Length: 423
Image (tube, rainbow, N blue to C red; front, top):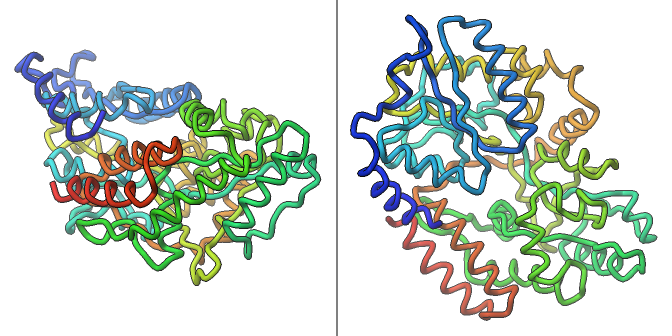
């Protein structure tokens, strides 16, 4: 559902909900003087189990506070959250991606967290991404980078070599994928996706921004070149066809070519290395993204995996901040969550749990350390970015399914996307 339509539907739904719905379960129904907090988040079954463990640990340390986990799968998360916010029944603590931070902050749904959570030991560049118009609406849960993941064993099975990620180009990736798919091994060389992070990196390599203030900064030529990569992968059979690719994208980690050992390369967030490795049962490796031939920058960036935010109407903002403080600054929380929500944002906490990280998380940390100096800053996109992502996915599908031309698609995307961020 489109975010603007989502908000409209949410407002309509709110009219039939109880008029006394209160943000944050303010009735403290857990008994006596205990405070009740609700914490909304999305994810997999494994994340839900980890979150339940970390909530239990928080409650042990804070016996006067109970935390109710409000869990959802990602596909339905924002629709459910919008409905609750519109009904004045927002959770006290909400997980929000960077692309949604401006949307919720712009609608007055979030509290300014400046000075409410200790952030001295945070990665300050990542922390700054949660600041909009001088207010700290989001506290990062951790950090990650959008990267290329490869299965070396699969590549070698196809009698190909793992590329040098310091110098490879998009043409190199397309050719490698083509060779792997044509190797007679039954393997697929690559998987593409619609993630705007890929477009953002690609645009940066061409000297452009995805967003330039409150308008799109990416050009029609860059969009056409980006869609050209999708088309070349399909045409050369380096990736599955459009229909199969859309099915795989919807299937997530477990059904991806990398996760099922039927593919060799794919773009994912670095904190997803663990889930993909577990699904595949094989060793996977993080690489830098390919570049355009004339690029002077790799375009990659360090991004908060998600933000913890506090509802503007929460009846317990101090306790909500205390929960976020625990999640980001307490080594006991980090020892449970590890890199599930990105590598810990607090440098001292990361150092305290570093030796406890599983081997796959150690690899993620080593990769981030290796490329950190190459990673550019990131800022929260303007209100409407959630809708822009939906527009990008829809129009990209029209291109790869050959329902429209890249020329027409570029103009359509820029028109619709600029209208979305303009409000």
